Image 1 (cartoon, protein in one colour):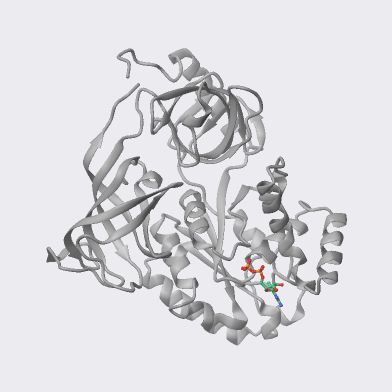
Image 2 (tube, protein in one colour):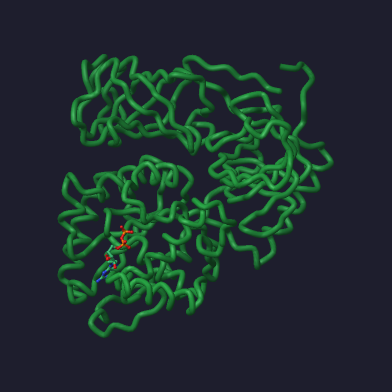
Length: 459
Ligand code: GDP
């Protein structure tokens, strides 16, 4: 460590950047950007619906779509071609081919949207956690023809909805999919909506932030237009109209810079590396000097791509790709936090947290071993103390409990194996939330309320 302070940018550069941001946000063609995650039980139709939506919006050309359809027919999987729009893309990523970003990005009249974690993976939950921690809004897809299976205790519908809530997603579109399979029945739709409304209100979603909508991802009904006479009973808007009316959060421009590295692309040349992720807070520009946490390594921002376009700056809420100049490229990985070197993210090993448990195989006790997931990092952890159980109103209903069972809110102490980059929920919401998993299942979600062992050394 060094005693001289490295500044992210000079004060005059800061003023210039702020002016650029202000100018851009006051122009009418600058659409607020939202990260959207699509969640729901396996086979609910997540890939099909998003693939079809992107096709309808013109993000996938007709020839490519015809090719998928032809191949799908040949393989006897004729209904799968829309899902392939997203799957093909994942294969490309694995092979390290440059991404065709269009596939994950689209615009509505008033919003620009990035789809996080294009689904299609069977083992969806871990992906869903890292996607959901970055998401601003979500679409929950429900299979209308097998609603009960997805909504049962083994199904993923409840778990996904609870996770989304615990991870800070306030706005949710609940799309009742596969309406074609139930003959577009209004009665069945209403039954599903009422059941879900009840469940979501017990999960503390406010009813005004929920939008219910019947669709068919396969026929395309009600994605961007309405054609089906059998569904003329539905008087609400289309999926794309609802997406267009999501409200946009604060940009936290005056907080210290924090960006969660979610993707690392191949380095373009020696000493340069491209990373993708979401800026949680702050303002950065080209030429800025940034600290990579954990660690002590600095880098310089060479290039910013903001919402898939070249830019000189990026601010809280933006999805960006940054090209960084860095001496030691191994200092950065998925899960690193880029931050202001004068006000870096704290490193913490032990903290107090408020958790909400899910359906548990065995109750949580003092000494329970779990895997801790926050932003895009994971770390083995131990529950070292059970402090209290809280009632619905957040008041202590039992001190020093011996165990914590299903769907309970509790205050606990958690110890991580190693020092990790974390924030208090009260200072940076998204960096102060986490989930706990055990044997491949999510056991709890929570927020960090107090650091017990941490350090905070600036560069
Ligand atoms: P995911 O696991 O949620 O991504 O689901 P997929 O998109 O892979 O879809 C699962 C299966 O349901 C596939 O066979 C799809 O063709 C089918 N499917 C998806 N949406 C619809 C729909 O609206 N109607 C009908 N009939 N089938 C659908």
